[in-house]
Image (cartoon, rainbow, N blue to C red):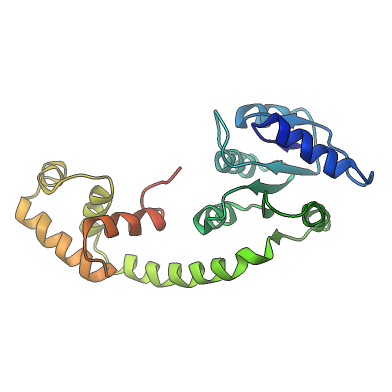
Length: 209
């Protein structure tokens, strides 16, 4: 099953996949909600899923599929080569991840690998993924060093709140907020609020999606 909001993309992928007769496209969807609705009726072996779509994006669809324990292999096919998207998809339980600039032979290979019960990640994404996983382990140690109050302050900083607003929200003094922020910066090894916000987003302390 193909899910992509661009008709030409779906038509092109369908022709590529069905050319040699080994793969059959049994259904298509143009947005996340339509995808989930059709998955309730048809039973594809593999779902090719775009990330950027109206109504529900691919990450949200993937979360719903895993939550409902639907029996379908999910292969994300996307333009996004940012490792954060790949990491998020892996954390949710995606079966495969491939970029839209791949060769058709690689896409078919990925589908067959998923059908054999294995996972597939486009090879040129793996070095950056491994580096990010190492960084995430180090980041988790930094997060673990934060007190509960420091975590609350960091989240408010990442949400763009000023010290006075944070003080009002948490019912503490502005001076206490400043002290917490100073300690947070030292513990997570950043030098300003923007870097702190990036750290929080990168580690899912606040949600990107």
